[in-house]
Image (cartoon, rainbow, N blue to C red):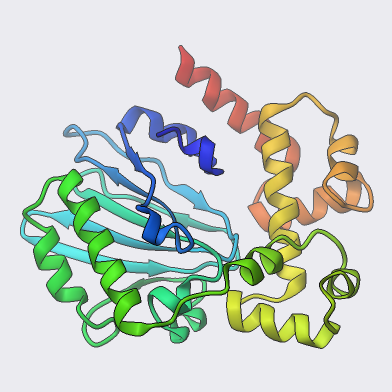
Length: 267
């Protein structure tokens, strides 16, 4: 599977680490964007710290080293840096916006902007799952974790309204205008957004605009002024300031870094 086909912007440095990318089974299609694995790296190698950009989704991450398993949950509403250990195997489930409550629990919406270690009783059954995953290869782990997630959905009986979640996460205009488009009040939009996605309408709108801008900075040759207008910012100055605040670098720096990484990867 090519991760780009499902909207994943892959960290350029990952190409040298041979990650595995997996589309979830149909029963999880509304809840999981993808599952990916990373093998142990050669002695002396290092994995670059990468940025985790917010999109109202979350990650359930497992790290396997020797006879130890560490499980972490990460739901970020701001850009975070994360370092993967080269001496461990990794398994990560990318949870879609709106699916955290259904797959895990509503309390996880309150654990924002930290890589939270999970244990019993934080998440029922997580220790048993970790023990089951430890001796398996990455193919078996992908199958096992999907079976576990499907069982959780069945036990919790907490499905999601996929149409509503898609509508909420697709906000592309000012909240007042978007609320009118959806036939609800501004206050109702705010309440539903926070209860379903864990973020405000303005946050979700910024996530989407930054995401679109990142795609255009990587794939196109448009000027920063043109990108600012096509992604919904007032002007280039507004775009540059918000992008820098959101990603820790200016649009020009982001474009230069990403294109340099892509060029070096192809050599």
